[in-house]
Amino acid sequence: MKFKNYSSNDYETVCDFLIELNRDNQHHINWNWGRFEWMMEHPEFDKSLMNSIGLWLDDDKVVGAAIYDMYFGEAFVGALPAYSALYPEILDYAYRELKDENGLGIAVCDTCADEISMTQSAGFEIAEQTETIMRLDLDRELPSGLPDGLQFAQLDPVKEPYDFQWLLWQGFDHGTDKAGFEQGGDYYPVIPEFRKHFNPALSIAAKAADGEYVSYCCLWYSDQTDYAYVEPVCTVPAYRGKGIAKAVIFEGLNRAKDLGAKKAYVLSDMPFYEKLGFRKDRHFTFLWKK
Image (cartoon, rainbow, N blue to C red; front, side, top):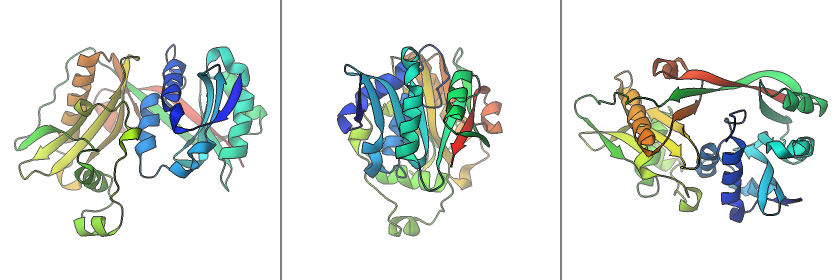
């Protein structure tokens, strides 16, 4: 057994760890390899802190990890079942190295009594903050028809970074002023090394007749798993309420199903996803240590 701080060479082994951690149960599905890959490329992710990620290895295999979420202050802590005795050590590292001025928050599945107990023993207290994972079984073809005037298109953030970021800028309600978007310095290059498992066929947009992208859904799927992870989803304000996001999501889910996915997860508790057929699958409660 040994400890090391994360480097870019550890990317694949961390993904393998997260896949194995969620293989037999989904008690840590709020942290899966797809979320890790999406986060690594996200503009809000503080890449300057990556060396602070802690890894516990048995030979060359990652068996435990402490990973901050975008920036310090919230973190994931986990160990493979056979190495659960490492959990207090990993938790102690996370608090020492990944906290911010407000302390550290850890999201623990409500059904993981041992992890809750160990986290409380380390001085963390249960908070009101929670998060939910919703699930949809992919056991049928989903209706994915778009309104007239729109068509599906693959949107590759590496090949079309401007269009991708402009769509997300509008879709996540930062505004519709393109000049302001360009002048604000929020346009950034997408680094291919952070998209090692990205599948363009699962990066789906709805495109209007004028060539503008108006809605988007990305799914993350590995043939080492039986699930797809949905992240992100958005629609520009002028096109909302027309069933476009539903169509784009269903198109992505149908493609993931064809690749072998048996189910899909999304980190959300929005009624929108319930209307699509998703059901609440796992609930996580944050524990905080100031």
